[in-house]
Length: 361
Ligand SMILES: Cc1ncc(COP(=O)(O)O)c(C=O)c1O
Image (cartoon, rainbow, N blue to C red; front, side):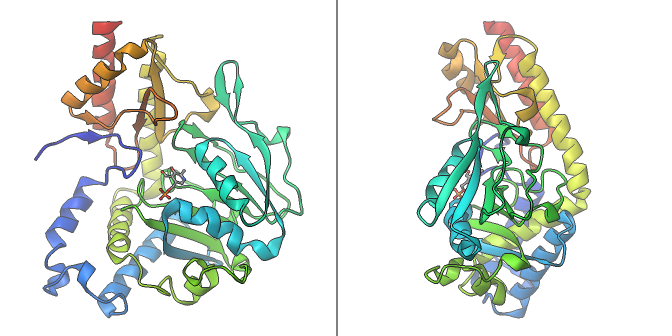
């Protein structure tokens, strides 16, 4: 087996023990002589998988009983339009904090369905990208909802505080940081996440929605994206992505077996500290994000001499450290260090970076 440490931003690496279990069960799942992909979603064996995945996620995130958990299709972008469509009856205007590419795209999509106001944007402060804190802007009490993205995958920008509103539901795109740290679900009206970073295969979206925000959709909302329809049908109004749901369940089990979100948060912090310490150790590597907004899931960095980029990537790959190229809009490097990335992966990257600097600095 070719062992590499995969720093891809998504689809991202999954825990090796989960992949091994899925492989072992692939052809003969639960002794049924078929794979999980080949059985009806309405049959008892799959219903048990679906229910266990939901209950494990509820345990992991301590999701209160007045929230529904939906397993939907369409990934993160599917929610960019589902949210405005589903909350239309709450008002005509949504408000948005734009901290990077993803929250910007969410605005463009919301604008198709309602007026979408931007309350603030990431700006440059002392040469670094910084997200204005809430003392610089306000949420209008009449807004239908407030949307933000607590972890911007492209630039590696994290917002470590929860916006406060007087009753306006806070909607968070947690695609790239769900399950990476403890959060209080009741701070939010809706939390959604595409699966391909900390949950499982791409295409799946997990949506955690407070009961009172269900049933407020525009009349023309397609049924498969209507929270009410999907909630009434336990996310099986249409045939759900059964394999993705099953795999998400394995990832939730893995996380529970490894101490849950509290334990992974400690490890994630350690990984990020190690990597940023290496970046900060000299001017050879530079991170362009303000300290308070540095992402613990996606660490971006540039080499002071961009002419060395190609060599860096080639040698990293040779050392088994793959998918470090930064997003095409940003350039440089990006190391995505989601839950499944072990500490040894980050240690290997840091030692490669130190070595590369010694040779080329
Ligand atoms: C923060 C964030 N939101 C949304 C998306 C879009 O997800 P999808 O490609 O599943 O539509 C991504 C994709 O990487 C993301 O990182």
